[in-house]
Structures are given as C-alpha cells and as structure tokens.
Amino acid sequence: MKPDQWHFSRPELAAGYLDLFGLGLSSARTLFAQRRMGKTEFLLKDLIPAAAARGYLSAYVNLWDDDKEPAGVLVGALYGAIEPNWWARLARRAKSPVRKLKASGKIPAFGEASVEAELSEEDKKYVDTLLSDALKAFDSQPKPLLLIIDEAQVLAAVAHSNFAHALRAELDVRKDRLKVIFAGSSESTLRTMFGRSSEPFFNWAPLEAFPLLGRDFLEFMVKKVNTIAKHQLSMKHAVAAFDQLNSTPEFFRRFLERHLTYPFDGPDAALQFTKEHVFNNEQFKRQWTGLLPADRALLGMMAQGMVSDFHGQAAREQLGTLLGLPKAPPMNTPAHSLRRLQADNIVTKLAHGEYRFEDEAFAQWIREQGTLGDDAPV
Ligand SMILES: Nc1ncnc2c1ncn2[C@@H]1O[C@H](COP(=O)(O)OP(=O)(O)OP(=O)(O)O)[C@@H](O)[C@H]1O
Ligand SMILES: [Mg+2]
Image (cartoon, rainbow, N blue to C red; front, side, top):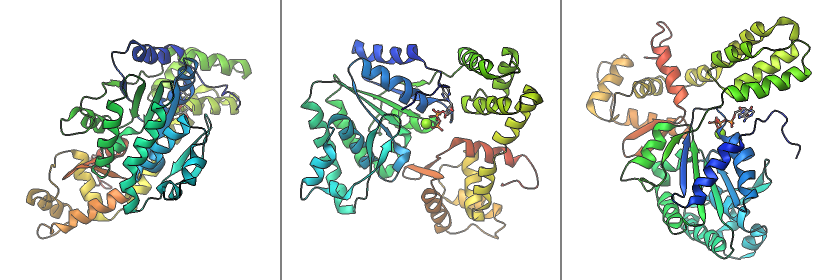
C-alpha cells in the first residue's frame, strides 16, 4: 500500500509505549481522547509498524466493527495475527462454530482478516472455547503479541460481561508476552470499566490521556502544504486555524484541503468554510428529530446527568412533566425508550439501571440545545 503522504508519524510516542512494555513492569495501557483526535491513526500507522520492527505480532480490533458481537471480532483478529491459515483450518473442523463466522474483508492498513460473527445463542457458549483456542495457538509460538482493542468501551456493556471476564482471565495468565492497548473516546465509560471493583478489568490497565497533536504536527503539515501551494500558508494562520478547530487534526486537514483548492480566497476564508462545515452538527440534528418525544426527554435527562434510576418515581415524574402528561408515566415508558436507544447505539447499558451515551459529543450537543430556547429539547 502507498504510504500516506499526509501522515505525521510519531515514532517517539510509539517507542515510549513499547519501551514501557519492554521493561516488564506493566503489560497494558488505556488511552483515551475525544473523537477524531488521531488515536486510531496512531495505533495503526505508528504503533503497529514499530511493534513489528521489534518482533511483535500484532492484532488490532475495533469493537465498533461489530459491537453486538465483540467476541467474534476479537477472536478473529487474534487468529489473524497468530496463524496465517487460521480461517481455513478452523473452518475445516466439522462442528466448529467458526463455520458460522464469515470473513468480512480486510483491515486495510495491514491486511489481516477480521470476522463478522453470526453466532446463535447456542454458539455463544463456544466463544470462550474459541478464545482459549486462539490463545493456545499464541502459546505455541515464541513471539510476543501486541493486542490493540480500539473502542474498548464496548466491553463495558453489561451484555458483554461474560466475555469480558473470560478475556481478562486469559490475558491475566499471559502478561509476560501479551501486551494490551485499550483505546477509546468515552473517557467516563473507560473509567468505569477500569476503575470499578465489580468490573472484570478493574485496575487492569492504567488510564491515560492520549497525547494530542500539537505544534510539530502543524509544522509538518504547513511545510508539506507550502511545497505545493502557490500562496504560502503561515504558521500563524495555521496555529489560529487549529485552535479554532478545537485542535482536531481531521478538521485541520479539511481546512488545508480547502486552502489548497481555493488558494486565492485566503486562509481566513478557508477557515470560515471549514468551521461552517464541521461544526454544523447536521447529524446530531437529524438523529434528534428522528426520535420519539419520550426518547428525547429521557436523553435530555441523561445528558444532564442528574438521574440515577430512570424507572424510579422521581425520574418518571420528571419525564411526565417534560412530556406534558398529567401524571408520571408507567415503568414501561422509560424501559421501552431505553431499549430503543440501545438498539440505535445511542446509549449503552453498563450495569443494572446504569446507562451512558455512546458518543459523549451527542450528550454535549443536547446540553447546548437546552439553553437555546424554542427548539430546546428539555
Ligand atoms: N498523525 C496524523 N497525521 C495526519 N493526520 C492525522 C493524524 N492523526 C489523525 N489524523 C487525521 O485525523 C483523522 C481522525 O483520526 P482518527 O480516526 O485516528 O481519530 P480517532 O481519535 O481514532 O477518532 P474516533 O474516536 O472517532 O475513532 C484521520 O482520518 C486523519 O485525517
Ligand atoms: Mg478511532
């Protein structure tokens, strides 16, 4: 594959994580940063190649690829890393539930197979077996493995609790050769996942903020742009633009693209254009208007973060007021709402009665609307 000309590589950051694992004092890390800040790009384009250069095998899995069946995706990624012919071998086994997993294309960055699980309830019992099979295959070869679990907060959902326990047990006994990076954008969910004693991954991996891209990234990009642009972009303009785009590398790249396409308009116009396009939140608006009133009211309450029990009398009374009802709605009103919101991947159930937004930016957007009068959701 052609290397990405616009990728700003971060070899020191990658080396830092690998050095840490090399020392043997810790075997796992959790990185969090808001959406679009460059986590996945770093993991795929910097960390994995650096790990390979040090003799690691690597397995990357993004649990959003199939958040209903993270077990299948993860087992597939492990096999892909450990055994080149895993798919053919497993599929030949007559009774193997793997026959029901089907290959779902390649992870483009490094060409390993991922799997999409189509497991029946009965098959789910076999997932633990599959996981331990995959890790036995790992045990039977000498290389260390770097396992990267992107959007790891999916594992915090109560629906995946059994698998999370099984995974943790398997990882526990292999800490010397199996290193794990968890990454995700939902800091609060990750904190729950690693910070609460009832959770399988309690205290398992220290949580740290993923170091954000800064001035050296801008210098790299500006230099590149100026090799092809007739109208040179100054660092001063670049810094101001990055700042106004919430220091988001993806948005900054859009700004550069606009600047390169319409050089005569100048950088201020390019920035104005980019801001209008990235901050218009069309998607949130569309999502919001597509929801039933009860679901909106409930999300509004959740965004404010004041409610702990959505089925309780107090919450239902609040819900009744928001919906203009004469009295509190019955228990199944919030129950149905929560079921719909989970099915639409808007909220995740972490534990009994405890719900979180999947995308914290949506919660933020809802809170912002709340102060805007007419269209206010709550
Ligand atoms: N090191 C980099 N060099 C150049 N561009 C980058 C870099 N990191 C990120 N970007 C740009 O930002 C975009 C978003 O990055 P990425 O998908 O890695 O973010 P993320 O933190 O994983 O976001 P999400 O939480 O939504 O998955 C990339 O597609 C790329 O355009
Ligand atoms: Mg990502």
